[in-house]
Length: 82
Image (cartoon, rainbow, N blue to C red):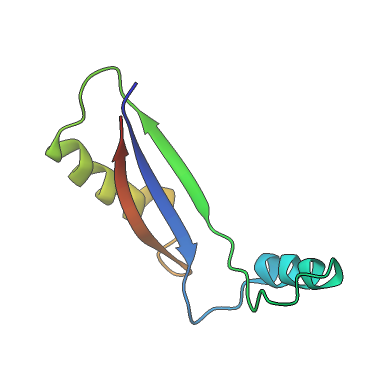
């Protein structure tokens, strides 16, 4: 079943408390080489037909207007997976 994957991340200029917490936990577990963690979200839009270029464009608009908070998040990628 084809799907469009929309990935949303917090804006680079903003603090990411969840990412900071995970980074601290990783350091406590001995993963000292990891310098930062940023946590975003992945949204999958499933289709029961082939995905078109119009679907991808719609997914970008949906991502920017509905699936993310434009004040604090950016849509960083929209990809198709068959």
